[in-house]
Amino acid sequence: MTNSKSEKYEFQAEVKQVLDIVVHSLYTDKEIFIRELISNASDATEKLRHTQLTEKSILQEDLALSIKVHSDSEKNVISIQDHGIGMTREELVENLGTIAHSGSKAFLKAIQESGEKNENLIGQFGVGFYSVFMVADSVDVYTRSWKTEGEALCWSSDGSGSYEIKEVEEALDRGTKIVIHLKDSYKEFTEKTRLETVINNYSAFIQFPIQVNDEELKTMGALWLKNKKDISDEEYKEFYKFQSKAFDDPQFWLHFNADAPLEINALLFTPTENMEGFGFGRMEPGVSLYCKKVLIDEEPKNLIPEWLRFLRGVVDSSDLPLNISRESMQDSTLVQKLNKVLTKRYLKQLEEKANKEPEAYDAFWKRFGIFLKEGVTSDFTHREQLLNLLRFESTYTKEGETTSLSDYLSRAHDNQKEIYFLFGANRNAIEKSPYLEAFSTRKIEVLLTYEPIDEFVINHARSFKENNFVSADSAEIDLESISKADEPEGEALDPESEKALCEYLKETLSDIKEVSTSTRLINSPAMIVNSDKMMTAQMKKMMKAMQKTDGLADEASSIQLEVNSKHPLIKNLANLYKSDSELSELIARQILDTAKISAGLIEDPSSLVERNYKIMEKLSTKASN
Ligand code: ADP
Ligand code: MG
Image (tube, rainbow, N blue to C red):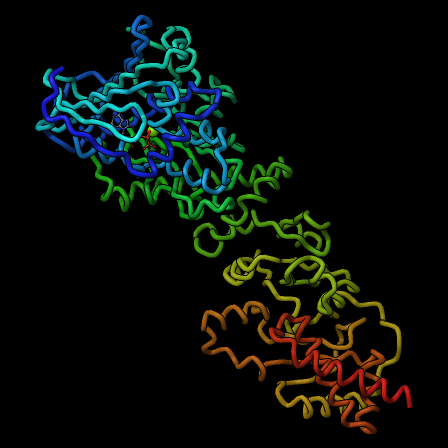
């Protein structure tokens, strides 16, 4: 080969980093480089098929789309050739000289995060094209772009700091041929049977014929078009990993075919791991759109709702116009229809899971429940269905166990028309709160919510099967009409003293709206109740932080205090304010602030602490006199 116009380039720093790790790795499953190169060949061929739909002049338009693997054990060389889109000079530099692509980027990130050269990561992330340098002394990439004006080029490198691109004189077929000069110790990869085993393992789902030394391999092809009966669980799992470039097993999958109103063949996988939960950032939608086995769009935007972005898989509809452009596809009514059908079917699968395999559903809920909650807040169309799928801990469940809203209602009292919930930092904090007292003595169940999104969820839902959600700290709850409480022990103040005490408190604690005696408190002396049934104190705080308080009454002036007139502290206070106004004022303020703590309303405890010392000082002076 004559080398006119040979140019030398340096790899980008990040590429050098990846190459350094790959070349010196002791990772044992070197064979993954075959998976990576065949997957690239397949990607390039898919892209060519797609380009054919929109472009008129394509080099060697009629060239058959297959992938050819050749080995030469004498020369210790293997080659992998495709007739895909190929690469121009700029593309060679961009694609093979820099890291802009998915696999290697994720690999680098994971390496940086784990802080060590974790060799297993190579297998997990593949490292794409560069993995070839695990086994190669040098690599030549012959390539010719589909663009008719393109040059025939050869990219070469030994995987150290630089690479070379030269023009090739002889005519090349469209596409790319990767020639791998194997290190002596990897001669095994030139054996035909070895190659076939590896390819069958990794590349069984390639949509194009694969030939190894001119003999065609049997591949799985478009799994989603096959009959369910003929597909094993193993094949589904392998397909998931292959198609979604995933590292986990699918938790479950949905394979369905429909003819009307639309022709749909879909295979939707629910992963095991929630990658957003791992801090990988917001997921992109991962269900690819095909028309008659031709990939139309790998990550179409509107095919599934945002809140189902964790789903992976394939949707094939022959009703799609083949030459649809990606832009017009985003808002095509057909895609919207597909979206509707897919969402409905998937939610139905979840419902069935929840009913028939509650444990499996629980496992799903733990990792992906957050997405369904997002759905409740953002997707009005599916809200009813989604509400059925929500799970919460409650005062009737054990820690870590959950209930559905329907089950909650099935346990509700006959007269109970509301669904009670209470928000708090964790189960322990909520269980000790004064708000639950009235509910537990009346055996009324309360849902326990811990995550900030829960409040938005409940706020958006407002009701479930015509039962309103009501926060357990709200002022207007009439629990007595639902279920009678056991009469709490101890005698209450007489009505006159109650009234006088409430007036005294209202006056002393001038910045609150109302003081009344409580019918709900059992063991605690006082609590703050909330005038908005669905707006918890936490929610108010959040709204305030987001400066959305317009229209909400000022926090202080909306506070309503309820006191327990059977509680010794309250009873004592009814006398104390007549004899020692200074101490009783301190105690009154302390009662209010302590109730604020239970309501989650205290952000700065300093004045409470200071007052506490003052009270102790007064009491100890009294006692020691
Ligand atoms: P990824 O496949 O995740 O993008 P790779 O390292 O495997 O990363 O490949 C890098 C890029 O090189 C690809 O995105 C593609 O643009 C280009 N490329 C690799 N192999 C081929 C090929 N056979 N034909 C055309 N382009 C290719
Ligand atoms: Mg790749």
